[in-house]
Length: 484
Ligand SMILES: *[C@@H]1O[C@H](CO)[C@@H](O)[C@H](O)[C@H]1NC(C)=O
Ligand SMILES: *[C@@H]1O[C@H](CO)[C@@H](O)[C@H](O)[C@H]1NC(C)=O
Ligand SMILES: *[C@@H]1O[C@H](CO)[C@@H](O)[C@H](O)[C@H]1NC(C)=O
Ligand SMILES: *[C@@H]1O[C@H](CO)[C@@H](O)[C@H](O)[C@H]1NC(C)=O
Ligand SMILES: *[C@@H]1O[C@H](CO)[C@@H](O)[C@H](O)[C@H]1NC(C)=O
Ligand SMILES: *[C@@H]1O[C@H](CO)[C@@H](O)[C@H](O)[C@H]1NC(C)=O
Image (cartoon, rainbow, N blue to C red; front, side, top):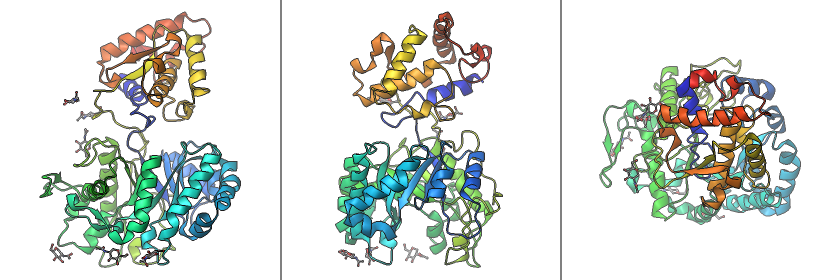
């Protein structure tokens, strides 16, 4: 119990700069190209039941937004390719879409990303030139209502944006896309938005089984592929594809843009010559994928780098054209039963980062002082989450940093967020003397050190008359005796 407490506490504590309490996350894509899917309300139940906390949509369907209101599930919504023309032409189109179709459901529907355009380089109608103007108009619309920091704007791509992806160090964008990619990369860098890529080792294996081993595609390989230019060793294709993208970005000198995998997965069924499309392989791929990203292990070129991924897809979609596999990417059948078992409970895919690999050097944290009184802490939290402009949604009930549910850790969350947002200066950790700076990664404390520090806080809280929570709940999980 103590270690669970420690993990939950520390997870929400070790905020890497502005990435509030995130770490790598695993979400799921909710494609709806089918005529037999459950209603959005039922889907929201299913998603909650399986502890899926991040969902990617392919449009901004109002029924779906309503169904996910107040579920805490973070949503990535989309402006589809068919809307790029009006969105790129007139600012007023983006403004009125936001005002009439999105804001009425926000923030109950917790939208955090808008993808403008979907794999435009694959689109038969050449709409590529419209993407960046549309992205800019959507961003401007968000700015008008002050949401540009809460909701990020980007666009998704297929790996086809690269003309070369092997070896990873040779990764390069196809220069015939430069006319729209270059301004897009500038936009992403300027607005700290991620580059979104859809990655499918499945296709690489299917189309080239002689050159790609199944184990390598499934994260099961015992041998390594070496990049002759860098000497980096690759044990799976997923990493190799991501690094190809990193190298392509670096080649154009865009070093700060993060990569986000907006689709990846494995089909559970295919046509005759798609022998690798089986439930076993799909389960293996997705399970290994989750394990691989959730601990922030990064890629060979970027070890320790956070990487958010979305698994494609929630449901099998019976109206998708093409080979049999196209209709069989789902984790669930339309009747909501699982195609194969994938653990979305517990730590695996709930958006909790593991703490291994977080280095403490150069980093300081600001936490609640154990000497602060409850009322002082409460006032400071109210200030930080109000005028201080900290996004405190994560410490609301049922959100990822609510537990342990006690004022000391909620205050520490708010203090540290404020501190990191405001340049990590001494002044930004003052809070009327109730904040203290620590330069040691709190997750690396020994159990004994943590217990001692909390015993102090507990005493302080106990002293306060108006502290209403029973002691057993003081640290959120389990009884206080188990912890102390
Ligand atoms: C798409 O349109 C842009 C300009 O609108 C043009 O530069 C580009 O060559 C076109 N691409 C293709 C594949 O037709
Ligand atoms: C680059 O993109 C163009 C236009 O889509 C395509 O015709 C060409 O085959 C691509 N080149 C490579 C090397 O993928
Ligand atoms: C395998 O790689 C070789 C050389 O790298 C290439 O000539 C061949 O076409 C590839 N085979 C397939 C099925 O892609
Ligand atoms: C993270 O997961 C990968 C894949 O399961 C594993 O190889 C690696 O050792 C893990 N890293 C840490 C730091 O736990
Ligand atoms: C990562 O954390 C887990 C759980 O705390 C632990 O079992 C594992 O050994 C750690 N891995 C490394 C490389 O520290
Ligand atoms: C940061 O910490 C790592 C180990 O966690 C160490 O190898 C490295 O030298 C440290 N860097 C600095 C600048 O202190």
